[in-house]
Image (cartoon, rainbow, N blue to C red; front, side, top):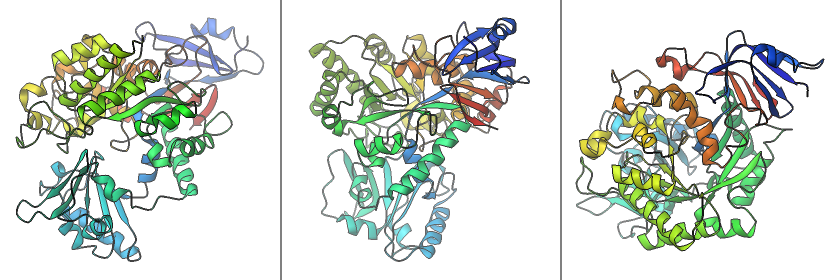
Length: 536
């Protein structure tokens, strides 16, 4: 067999044998043909082979984001971008500017604020927003997506007032004296307002998604494991949207779509289970929420928050209902991907997995704990014993590192974001961004996993530096680890003969560059299934 493309002149990191570099690589059609010495690979050259001189650039397996919301990110590009704004005044200025551009009654939406980064160090309120936009309903999501602030116009449209009861799995913040809603909505309470926001048109969804997918390819991402059915309007609608954009004759990027737990029965009726589909669009885990976010103090903890002893967070479901939900997905032969940030949520999920296996024993279920930020040694041991995959987001540390010790206290912090401890326990790990919670760029995650610092290099030496990963271990999160979590380790994630020709040519060698430069890496050439998906 003759190669269609040969790569020579730079290190080829196949992701096997300890990431030792090979000299060259050959692709034939949609598969890897040969990896090895230049002379061995050169024998596969034919009259039509394209030869790419790497000129010292490095080849790595195509990266995967194991957990994100790519359509949610795409649609967020039209909202007010509040991430990094230094004060409530700056947020209000952005809302005021939007109010001046829109007709009265039109919605103003945005996301990205973080009270811990604001000069005022407090949550925004409806009064803050009313002062600058009384004639428009306003809903601004915190960067975690688990909390939002709404103005009075939005609260009125949602029918939220002093007498409105908290919805199950949610909370409406209230003034301690008057009992009036403050505008802050947590978890399921956010939906009371968010469901009223007019959805974007089908054309807008398509254009925005195409833009976001092209951006992913520029980073060397070749596969996305995304949770987007609530943005796409349902299972069938979301599949139709993605299938109209991705594939060998369109945008060549692989998509795994998570199944919302509330749509499990519909998915089963349609034959959509974990692993069903094709190499370009397939279904992944059933997504279940156990709790909220650590930054918003809605992550469920076993003991009270160190910086707010009045709360232990929020469980999205009652215990028995949650256990039944996990068991139902497990019984259907599906993988479960559970959002669990706090140790209370982690303990509940592991209890549910153990109970599901007791009722319906099944080998190699590979259920995933998504985020798993606050753990303990016993919880890690239980994860390993149950074969639960740790679906982590190292990039979270760039912001969370500044406050997570205060949030949970030094004892719990010692086993929080504890990636090396998880590896040492034998827990399989994969890496993602949770975009749009964090940026789409996977190299930010690699940087944070290796350095345990924010992107400015703070703090010197890194937060809990004993939990650092090596460059090889960090790359494993986004290659072989993400493939394993998706039951695709025999198909992609490594560059070995017979595996998918998914690869990225990088502008610098991640194993030789200064670790501080890891976040600057970009792909100059991305190939998916042997198709050139991006080339500078």
